[in-house]
Image: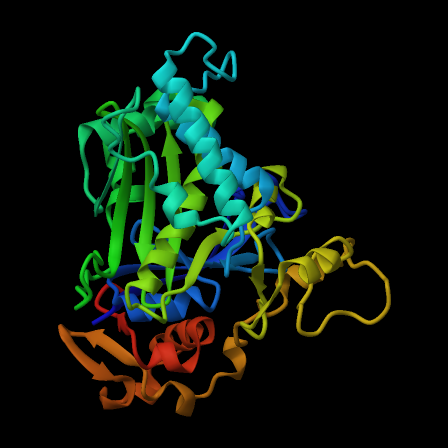
Length: 412
């Protein structure tokens, strides 16, 4: 069972690119989840929702800067292949970030390096670049200078993870040390409302929230926070030791996660063939890398259909907000949209004023410690406060999810 508590709309500064809209806020609709099935979250995420800990949110697309991105059917570019090769050579010991090549290496190292380069060339010339094979090439090699170990585990807290998170937030995001607490780390990247669900497929971890931990010579250097859902692997967050920034671990982790999706699909989870990278912000330079994983798509904020990233970028160059399914006619730009646009009904949501009593009668409520449909409550049509809150929730999640997920009304 999925159980949520609805907060409604609120505003805050944009946490992705630190830019602000002309009103000074990024507006989003928020809910917290006590419990959430992986299938229900899959449906929410396909309608533009994301999670941070147990907090679920959907931005107001006209009044914020965040479209969504989905990457699938991936083909590695030349620069991405080089990135993996460089990472593998660092683990092998034949690449030094200062000197690029280890000139003083012994003959065995030089031979291994030549063999590695030959293997990569063979894959390019033969059956193409095998992402899965190359991404695992550096793991647990006893004959290489360094040992890479990847541990995929259910989301959990450890002091080692927290210390890595603390260093990352201070160095990369310029957080003040007093702001980075164990409690904040747990709420943000450890706690999850997703219910773990096992599968009957061998070598598949199941569905739920996980940490993919990168150990180099038994030192934790990176953690990827991931949700494995029925149709996708969703990237929640990635943090790394800044001492290893030369390895471009953020870009490398995306490649490893794409390979994971391919492995899951090959192992029999045929519906799970998508990799979700989260929100894409066209005006934010730090987000531009997401467009480098191709072919990929963006989610239309109104129809919830996927459209080619390249087609979408051309439209986003001209328009602050655009529905890819129904772009404006002509070449005019709407980058200087009127401030009143921010107060229109958010794309992909209903206007609560148009939601009728008949629409919400089958919404499931957790009320007085029992689960009931709204129309099972006595005199419900006369309870305006209750109805208005349910209508706002119905407008945000739409009919199918409103009648599937249980709305916690005990806290109102």
